Image (cartoon, rainbow, N blue to C red):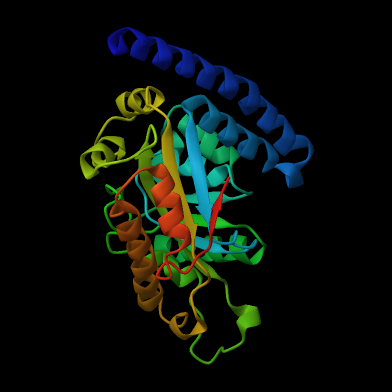
Length: 288
């Protein structure tokens, strides 16, 4: 029966995805033109609609980072953008190649994505200054700091270059001038109410040079999926004077959360109970 219903489910969800995009995409262009300050409303509705179409349950742990924060996150799949984008107004930092992707590039531009060039030198300084200006203006930014996608078993080392956008001068000890960095962990935790094995997580991870369209279709055919997001408190001022320390400290927080999420045994209810009672994860549990 699954061989019959899986293509039907994929086709239905793909149609819903395209219809939602065709309706809200042009509407977002209109909103940005007429009322730029309300640019974030349509993307949030769009992302929430996509989660409903795919059947994803998101559990959020910790307090929402305030405006003007940098969220330093691990990266598993293109779906990560939908997960975080559905929570609050936010823009993303992406490699410049994303701008040229059909459909997804246009959607990224409508969400005020910062496209960075990864060559060293003056491009690094330009990326840093643009991120700092946006953060200082009150925008939340998400940086997938590993620089690539992983399988969610743990965090790969965070690249430090773009953390120069939030690095403070050594003599600046004023918290008023500090841009908050919130480590953020994304864990694909349960499938159809049962804890996912690492082999299953590997299937949902968009790794290496894997083509986007096949992975998109695979995800659209998924059974009910539960994903946990942990927003950690801002990093302490003691690490904010050195971009490498910032990267290391954020990576350690995210890695600890991922290891915790991926080593819980039992069913989905066990996960929620264990997370909310785990003193090692310095965030409070909240389901939404």
